[in-house]
Image 1: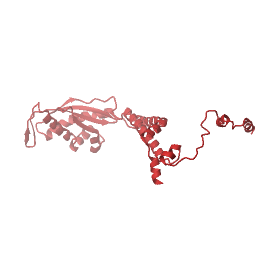
Image 2: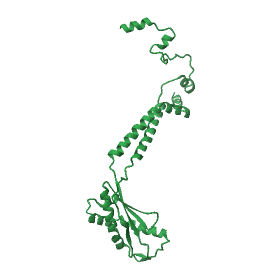
Image 3: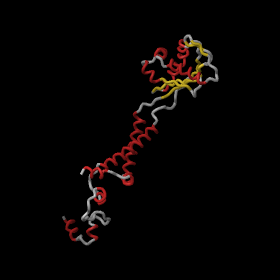
Image 4: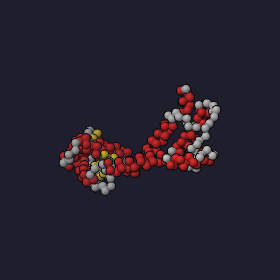
Length: 259
């Protein structure tokens, strides 16, 4: 009996597609509901964040690090990129960020500010970008500019002969960097489609009821001795089948109406 149930639970691809097609309205409804929920979540519940960016230039002339001297040619972009990475590491150190907190008079701890500040090289050049993310666009601008002023001195304390200049100060962003409402909405749309399809398929797999003759003859391999016609599948009203074949007495309807 268990083997028969397992066979009955199997679905071929065509039957699966037909099942999803007949339940297309459920899938569309779920997609709209999930998309609407994710849109509302991103639009009204997620705190918007803003990015302020300051650009710094690394002078790639000769410099020394400890007892080792380096000389970098302008054409050696890979070496310049390594120097940029060194400065980015110095930017993220505790001493640098605590100095920024002190000079900017911030209420953040080192760990909190560290999560707000990122830096990266611009297209493998000698210029790197300092990005500060904050719920307040003016705070993001202020912190980025304080870092741009503090960083050259911190780098010169570590790397002898270094030269870091400000290419561009940060400005207050006018548009938020996150959340991306369109992205959240599309995720909700796809999630609604996936969840609804999964529910429909699982409901069909675990459905052990017999719905048609094909289930008995092909799936369960049980012969059919007789079948009862569908007495409700007509378009002639409540008593359409009986009236069509002469089994309905109009006087019965009158009696029922009087009752």
